[in-house]
Length: 136
Image (cartoon, rainbow, N blue to C red; front, top):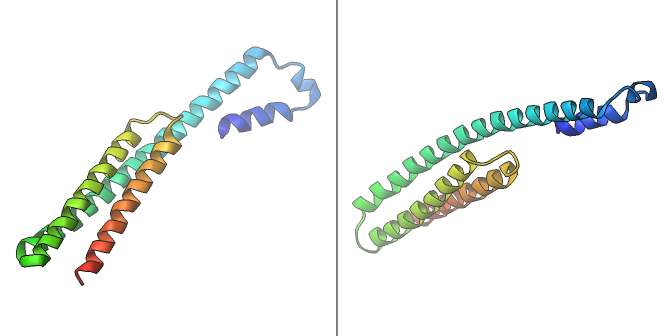
């Protein structure tokens, strides 16, 4: 975004200033804009990773609650709890993998990996809510 802004500013400069701009100036400005963009993405990524880790910690606690209920249940209810817990753990593992992808993503891959984690976590959250509804 900053790169685009820098390029826009170079285009809207008065003609007298444009004639004084060299290719070295443009390269320098483009490099500075790209470096600023990467720093912004890294800051945003760090915050997103922290939020993702907190979300997975909360999911772990909720899955553990269902495991406790499964341990106390008997018969068909126990089997159903165990089935749901197994599915939730599978979805949780997928969300954790997507979070790892997010941690290791480059600036170029940021949007895709961020969306990948978001989708995986939404799947986990929905599955948990569905499981809780089953046992009410």
